[in-house]
Structures are given as C-alpha cells and as structure tokens.
Image (tube, rainbow, N blue to C red; front, side, top):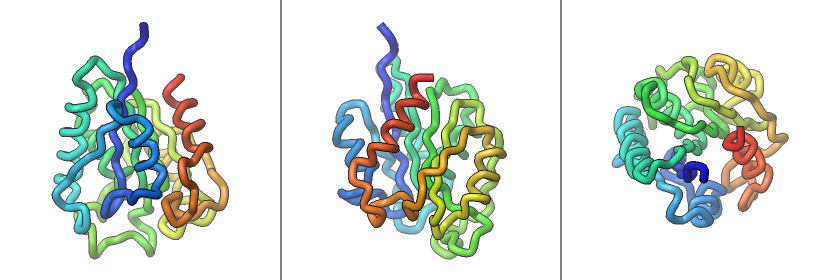
Length: 185
C-alpha cells in the first residue's frame, strides 16, 4: 500500500474565502488537508508564515504521509521559502498557483514588506507553477521566469485572473487535474 497523501493549504493574504478553490479542496479532503494559521494574515510577515507552514507540515506528516504543499498567491512565497529552509524534509511536491511577482507594480509591498525581497531559488522537490495570462499580480513572462528559477514545471491556465474567488472557478477542476498529474509522478 502506498503512502497517504496529505495536503498543506497555504493561502495568500487574509486566507482563502469560502468560494476559493483552496477552501473547496480543503473541505473535500477533510482529515488529509491542513491549512496554515499564521498570526499575520492581513499584514503578512514572512517568518510568521514560514513558521505556520512548518506547524501545518508537522501536523500533516504525522501519519507517514507524503506531504504536498498547495499554495496560492503570496502563499507561494511562504511555501518556496519554507522549502529552501528545510531541504532535508521529505516533501512530496509543491503546487504553486498565481505567485505574485515581487518586482511587479501590483506586489503588496506596503502590506507585506518582509515578502518584498524574496527571490526564487531552486526547489529540491517536484514543483508545478500555474499562472494566468491576465493576472494583475504577475505577467506570464514573469511567472515563467520564476518557474525557471525554481526549477519547476510551468502551466498556463488561460485568462483566469489571479486564479482566486473573483475568477469564479469554484472547485477548479483543471487545477485538480494538474495537482493529480503532479502527485502521480
């Protein structure tokens, strides 16, 4: 019998609301999904978020699970920073959706100043980055550059904005299929 798959859900600023695909997926995987709980949801602090990823990872990995990080927006930077700081942790894979470009004009520098200096470093776990052709927080070109620097695979999901609740994706079937393709490698 294979290892159990557990998911660490890493939303962006303020968490993911009830209509967000991350919340839908978390409800569908109750028992095998753990959402991070930083104390700085609205004014993100990178170290706080990375610590929250660690706590969620510890909880998710209790039962000899293959842990998959499922991150959206600013959560992609918390996930990648955690992965770079914890290279000896047995993480199954990372699913990074709509990472904001820290050099881009829409990056939340005022709200999340500790995230403003992040940079993409090679990740030592299988990683898939999913982006949109019309994301206000990251152009496809910038997303491809981040993907290359992370050493990840890239998928352009089409014109779906920031791939959040505003995009009206609901359970986001395309995303589920992409996650399945990543975890079945």
